[in-house]
Length: 214
Image (cartoon, rainbow, N blue to C red; front, top):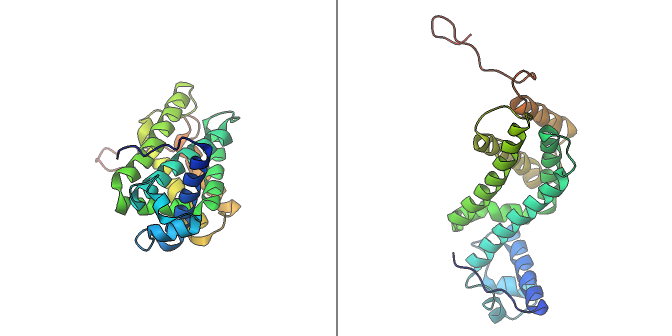
């Protein structure tokens, strides 16, 4: 999608931000299909025509919210993991930060999920951008000997899958943080999967002479 107009004044940026916040609330509470531009502008407290100074359609607003979610989440994860001693600690800190972020931004989480049916390219861009940054961090950790060898992108997507359904079940569906027992179980699973060979990582079963796994 082509780039949207960038406000040239602080007042314009504040209006655009208000419209996005209103769209986030409307989409999250009522769904994309049931939300109108009139409902967004009414919630934002501006004239309906003002919306079109910043967005061509409500789809543009949805796409911008998805991109905003991606930027905000990456910033939150980066800040949360800055002081980690190694990659496994970074995973622990990152998963806790992701859960906290999801609880604070439930409507944005719903917007991202709905975008797959409205603008699939934005939905895929959201996850691909997260995965690329995640894989780069894992590759650096592999270079330091903190993570088992293997395709860093495959590890990134697998970890994102764990985080996604953890966030979906607790912050979104149950509107609460996961219990400590759940988080500790997840961390144990991740640690075993990421630990370098020889550090207690799970190994695949060795084949028996008859070709079956032992």
